[in-house]
Image (cartoon, rainbow, N blue to C red; front, side, top):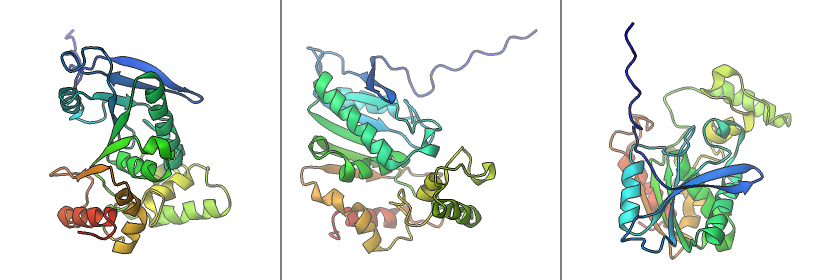
Length: 268
């Protein structure tokens, strides 16, 4: 009998650090990897980079996670990878508001117990919505500690090649009947999801609808204009060269310029 080959070594890298609970209700954990000496001789790091993944992600969400950790350590920053209630399949019964509350809890915990003074948020895919939403709705004194935001793959969950109109209509009916927390049919989505979260992700002007190319310039400014009001904030927005979640009919370069203009309140 042939033995099966061993599983591959952790494809996105191996990480060493501290696992901690930053919230007891609900119980939530995060993993922090501190820079090694000589960039961190006293084991204290005041600069924290928070990596927030997309739908169904948890810690180590992307192939570049290890590279990001290396670059953070070179600059004297630690990398923090949280588990939110919306991690893995929890997003289907969650909301951006819940995510922002939990991100706020994480940053407050890091300030109180891990010597944090300033933060960078790196959002991947739907994590970009989390970053944008937190800047507007997070606790003001905590948001003020966020000095850098990177939006990597700020894609539209709504703007796909598929037709969701039938299920959108079904979800709208449930919400109108005050049944927004009812689950959608299995055929509606690839993961369990409530009617309200389905509309947030897939209906035009849904709560998650920040980056769709068919939004007008004014609609984009309404959603993104608050970013430019953060005068001490540096922001990077970037797509992958062959992002599989950007439909073929979307010109990424044109859209990226429109997003940046909206964040700058109409200034090129």
